[in-house]
Length: 113
Image 1: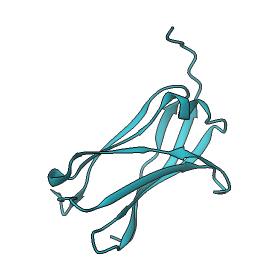
Image 2 (image 1 turned 180 degrees about the vertical axis):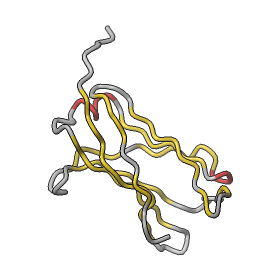
Image 3 (image 1 turned 60 degrees about the vertical axis):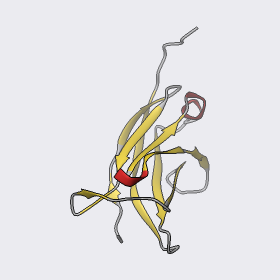
């Protein structure tokens, strides 16, 4: 896989932001046993990191993953637009970008006591 898919998202500050993915090739789920995934958020010029997504391997044999940012992380998203990408490493150590795009940040005001 050489070109990552592009997907933009809307994110509320101070809220959990999950991305659920099923890793597929030719329309079929890919067994991701032995694969490692990582995802990060950064500014447009890539000079400042805003954090890393946590990665949960929901079902490796079915290619299911969950990437998540916490409310504490999204509270620090000061610019109205940030960039993210998701990268993976195969068991043979080849590395590829899976997904990238823009996070459009909007202000959330509700506070849970």
